[in-house]
Image (cartoon, rainbow, N blue to C red; front, side, top):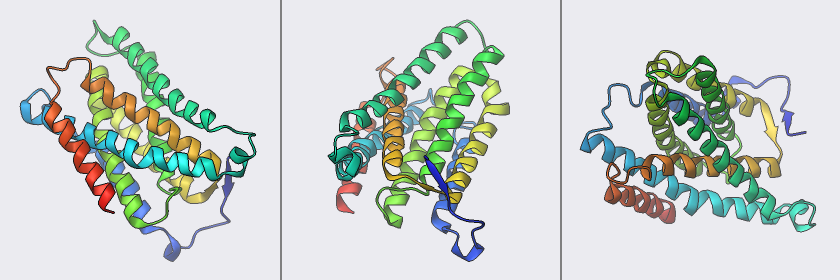
Amino acid sequence: MLLVLQGPGVAFESLPIVPVLSALALAIVHLLVGQGADTKTWVGRSVLSAAGGAAVAYVFVLLLPEIAHFAAEDPRVSAGSVTEGAIYGVALAGFVVFYGLEVLAARTTAKRSDPLPGVFWGYITVFALYSGLIGYLLFHQELPGVVNLLLYTVAMGLHFSITDYGMRRHLGTQYDRVGRWVLAGATLAGATVGLATVGQPLVVTGLFAFVSGGIILNVIKEELPNPQQGRFLFFVGGAVGDAIVVALI
């Protein structure tokens, strides 16, 4: 089984307050970040690049090393029944899934102000599952401690600012009317599942790997297609700043 229910109920006094607040914060990012912001301006684009750099640094400096560490320690990996390559294959799957989604959205919305309903709901459904997964992992961090959880929350908040920008560009007004509410609700739903269940260690490692692949693709697709719009120094500043924070903790 991937998940195991914790029990008949969770007493209010035993609720993990930090991940609960983190889930609310990530939902608010979906609802509010980007509202009224003009990412075509120098300031807006610079902030977006810095957020992308910080999110990618989190993946390479903290998340991927954690995945490698916990994968190597799992008895199924050491026994050879599951390979580390398979776990990194899950990260590749996350990269490929979101690349395919990006290609589909770009091709079907190129000549339309709003996408077809099927494209819109397909796009939103995939990102809702992704947001729910990120919310779920708030309660199943591989490394214990508030600091690690806060680093994850900040990185995912920055990452959501990138993905929301891309979705608003592809989906137009439908994203503001419907999409952002669906994603905020999915984040909270995933967190609720995380609170009520106990994750299996190797499965959690695989889920973090999938998220890593998704983060890398979603940042790259915003920075690379038109380098003239990117802000390289701000991207580097975000990456270096996040790497320093992680190194000092």
